Length: 384
Image (cartoon, rainbow, N blue to C red; front, side, top):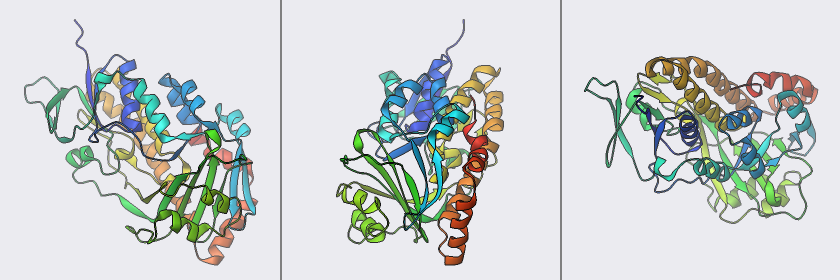
């Protein structure tokens, strides 16, 4: 008789839920532990690039998720005054990589993943406090939580930047590091006229980007080089208007359409490289393994890739330890390279010294779009 394999996933965000869907499709019994009282997502917009859509296809969810989002027709980079530095064509992205760039609300993606799982899979209000190897010789691992213990063949840490699983099993890991800038994210009320194209506007030590979403709404994101832990003295919406209200249109118009209490502010961190993503029967994925800055729009995309690869490795290998070693081998170098590249792009985008910012803008203006797309091929061309 074949014994049903079991997995405990710590963290009910995009990566954890995707891992649960991937493992269940391969016959695993899964329990997802989420410390919050319910499974939800309070974030704003989210970009799903072709590699993420292929991961979602492997989960059987690509078509559904694409219907929830909007395909960005075109975009690019502008300076603060609105002059174009570089332009991108989503049709060319789809031609080269087989799928478009889709923008949707994070909550819609989380909801689609939740609806792909049976209710008994989800354990809200469950805080994992310890992980230990089972001492009965059965080769299992035990997740200790505030309501008891869960015994499983594998424990997956998908619990984010401040991961409890990482701190328990990788105690020597270096803590997250502040990237030097904070970020604001918001979604406007529906606008009467759709945007012609999205853009990321570069200033000096500040950036402001926007892209269309379904229903006439626009996802806006902004950054500023400031010390960590700050807050707008009159609220974050007022802080955005103070910093960006005189930038080129459509930024002032977009800020006028932002709900009064609808701005999220988060200091930006990434994770120094870990020596491994697997320890015995415990694995890390998503931000718990490789938190990255948002400059490439790849955080959720890489978590979705992780989930698909983890399930595939566990399905193929003869034992869990070998499977997780294979997962680590397949994912660590790739994701850490994306972390480095995103950090470099963010640092350049935040340059404030006028000669450096001017040279950056000139380089962007002189770089052919075809060269930019070629440079993205190692990321966007990923196949499950």
